[in-house]
Length: 268
Image (cartoon, rainbow, N blue to C red; front, side, top):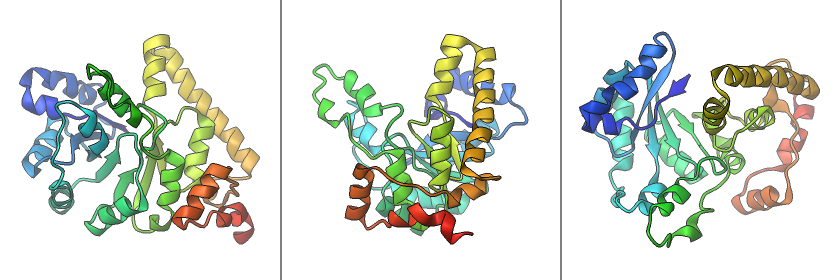
C-alpha cells in the first residue's frame, strides 16, 4: 500500500494534476490512498479520490504544523465534524493520520466516538514538520517547539485499550526491521515508512532500494525466529520491558506497562 501526500495543491491548481496521477499510472493495480487535511469538504474528498482512482482516503491532522506555518490555518473547530461526515458518506476506507506528533488516548477516543475505524498514530521521530515550518520563519522564533509531540512507541501505548475498537497503524521514525517489529509488537496492524525509502531512492537508486526492502524481509524472518513467533499476529504475545522514561509515562497516564512483560506466559 502507498499513499500520496496532500492532494490539495492539485485540487487548487490543475497544472499539478499529472504529478499526482503518475502514482496510479505507475501502479495501476496497487492499493493507493489519497490524502487531504482534516478541514476538507465532502466534495473535495470525492474529487481527491477520483483524481487518482484511490482505494482509500487518508485525512491528516496537522494542527501543530499549521500553527507554526506562517500562513497556516488557525481555526480547527470543524475538524471533528468534517471527519465524521466523511466516515458517514464515503464508501471507501478512511484513515485519520497524524503527521509526526503522535496521538493521545483522548484524541483516539474522540475519533472512535465519531466513527473512525482506522488511525495512523504517526509519532515523533521521523520528519519534523514544526522544524521545517519554523525554518521558513525569518527569526526561527518557534524553535522551542521542535521537540513537541510524543513518540510512536508512546502513541502505541496510548492506543492500547482501543485496539478492539479501531485499526492502529504506526509510522514516524521507523527506519529498520527492528523498529518494524517493535511497532507490531505494541499493537500496530502495519507500519508506514517514508523518509528512509525516499532517502535510499534519491541517494542509492531504485535497484538498491529494492534490495533494502528485501533485506528487511530477511531480517524480519530472523527477528520472528529470535522471538519464537511464526506469524505477525503472534507478536502481540511478545514480552516487552520498557526503559525508565516510558515506565514513568505509563505510570502518569495509567497505562499497565507491567502486563507487557509477561504476555507470553499468559498465552501458553
